Image 1 (tube, rainbow, N blue to C red):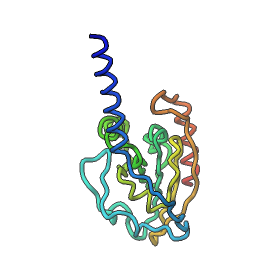
Image 2 (cartoon, helix red, strand yellow):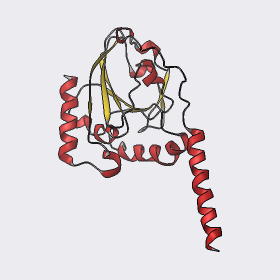
Image 3 (cartoon, helix red, strand yellow):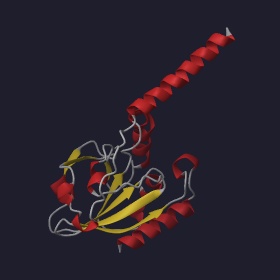
Image 4 (cartoon, one colour):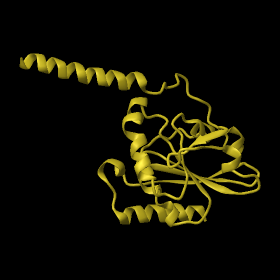
Amino acid sequence: MIGNILKIVFLGIVGFAGLVYLTAPEERLKPKAKLDESKLNIAYFPSHYEFINDSFYTKKQDLFKKGESSYIVVANHDALVVVNELYNYTNKKVVLVANISRTPWLIKKLAVDGKLEDLYKASKIKIVNDSNGEIVKALGLNDIIQNKYFIYKVLEDGSIKKLSGGTVKLDAMQKGISKEEIKASNEAIAKALN
């Protein structure tokens, strides 16, 4: 009896691990050439965006208007917990990008999407769900360290300039983060935007 239960539990764990492995994004066999940062431009971005805190899609030209400068903050896993309050620290036009493209599909559907919707329910800043990685690829960003964020400025002509990057507390999403740490991280991001 106990042997059969152990077999079922073992097969369930193996099955779940197999599903996660099979739905993980394919890694490229040969490394991609690094993009020249001087050639970054919104022209290479996708034409439509899905927002986490909005049920509608938005066109690129509505998000990045010609003749206006704006900022892009690409946030990896743990940084997403911090930047949801960035609107309290700056009045600049900021577009947040959730860099969740390398998360296995099953985990995205079961956990990540719901957690992000809860986090960004009250946020005044739009956050793009970059689940397929198109924006991250257009920015030439290959860094997937979970507690990093990257700040870019979109200039009036549509070209993009990388301003800076930084880190937040490791495991902030799973283990939590204090209000003081959130404030310090957001102040550092707001300072880089000025």
